[in-house]
Length: 68
Image 1 (cartoon, one colour):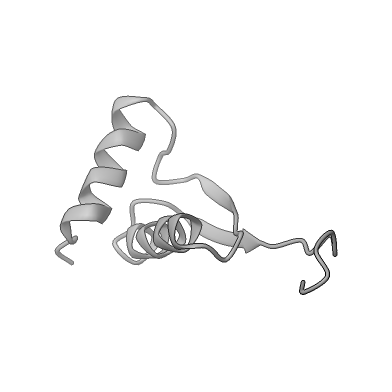
Image 2 (cartoon, rainbow, N blue to C red):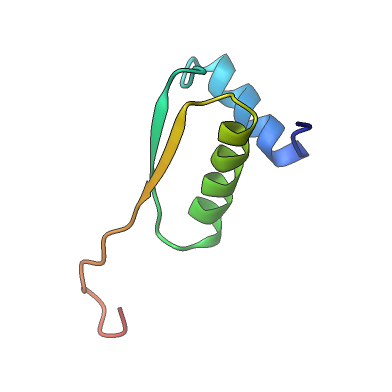
């Protein structure tokens, strides 16, 4: 599976900094904003490509804002 540019950059950064390996499980803190959503998407692509074992997202609504 060919990885798109952003996903390739995420993989390169993770490898360069020794953050992830093929047998690793990743927990992503998901705010729902564009940054965390893009990271989750890239990590899901890496999982599909066999670069990480598992990707899980977690979102906690603390109800600190009236509209949350």
